[in-house]
Length: 435
Image 1 (cartoon, one colour):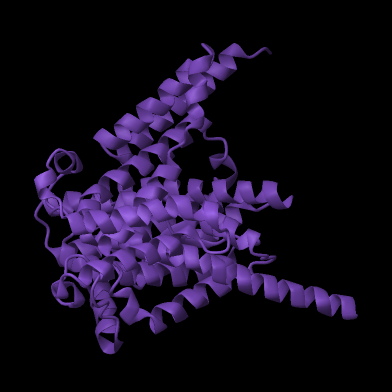
Image 2: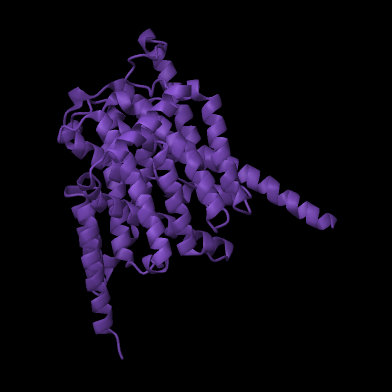
């Protein structure tokens, strides 16, 4: 009896510290993803993006953990969601759509993607997604990583949001050296920090370094000690009370007024987002299975993730998936059950409420630095081995093709190319195989 009690106590303690450690990784990244998406509408929307990231980390963390069947899996806003939604927002800005309508379209896109995931789970596609050829998945993830990096270069150097990343790179006169110092300190600390200590997540070390650099600069420039009209920081979240709920209610009324043709125009982007989120989740589940000698139910997980994304987008949050970084931190911190995901969601909300005034001071270049490191880690270097053998050169060509289409045309076109090439790879394997 006492052994059972001790075992239960070990589970509770492990889940608590695991969920807390995972939150320290997931929450700053979620805020960064939200800022990336909404600042594409305009710099004044950065605070709304930070709030959307917090809501996403809380809602997805809670619902996916309750409904999903994978122990220790941590779900939160992720890089694929940021890549697809920010690219979508940029396209709508170029088309001249009003900012309020763009926010509405982003929320509707997240809801549709969640519904697609639920459909995937009910139809049983969860077991089929794992059969997508590795070169296609590798190309997707590398493309998303490069898109994330490109979207953050302007923020890293403090350039105006109207400039493309390649123009920013060749135009040093557009840079703000203060932003570059903050972002550079963040990136360097995130890369070096984990080699010095494993106890504190690299994301937290990076934000601490960015804040320290910012306030060091503020000692020389008193204007940086003001929150209002300060382009280097997120700014006030504006999450209080009636304003937030009336805003959500108003958006739901606007969604009800959307025409069927407007919803239909979102289906392609929503399907792409749903596939990327599903692949990201199931890839994390497979790695978790290998490390814990367990087996997840992919269809149940997709249904849970889809419902979580519908709920998150419905209340103004960013959609997400099962994330590798936070999940591995959760596992290494002693988590044993799905309760760790609940702890992550609850602690994200508590920390955001307690530290809302602190979050307003987080430098935007520091968040850009975090996402650049995330993007670098998403780039898959394994396909470089394909060049060494003539039998796998075609596989390397598939990876390159998906990456190029993703960067030059978009993730929707890359998904079409990926599917076509996946069929070709399958046919090649069948023709080359023996009966």
